[in-house]
Length: 258
Image 1: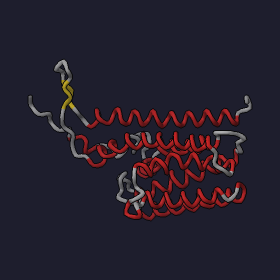
Image 2: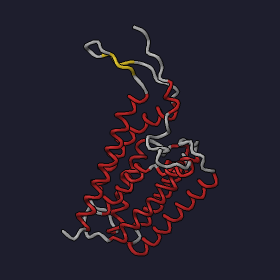
Image 3: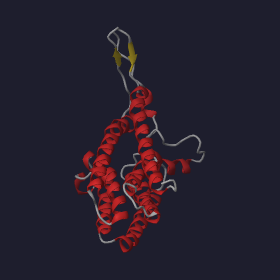
Image 4: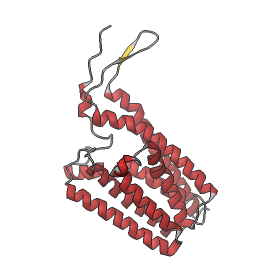
């Protein structure tokens, strides 16, 4: 049996399946789109909505402010810090623009949080401090990257948004909120287990070689595309499922048909 030829196309893969879409013509716009990680940003904002709409009553102004704060802190600031640390997305965004985005995003999120503390209560202040520490330490790999782990990702990008969304509404944490946080933790853990090998293949792999031989003797070549397809197909399905759940809870709490 001859050895399969390596898949040289692995080195030419985009850094993410949603990166640099063809419908955006300008390179600068494509770079900013890629930096925002649209599927993942929506995914994590959905956790905020799930926490905020877990039980009623739901105050729309607090829900909008919570989602906006997380968009600024995670969608913009955290992703800008991540790109500053090693350029994993290979964008051409200048360093100064990434710094401005990171500082502006975090400042905006903290400002919204302070307003929230005045309206909601002191419990929210704890979440502001913890969120700021997580955003800086995880994405910049501070403290010797001790917080840059799969478990910390699941806690920071899964459970934390759910609990913050709930606390912003009710100025407390309840048993149902903790259970929802556990759900988000394991969902984010599944995301991490799928995205880690996908990122490694897209960003750190030069070529792929090998084949799968079935019991009947038929063989199929292993390629970067064949390995990525189930990983990223599952990631896309999971992201849309969390968004759909968030929409369902928001409609259940806010729509007049209640």
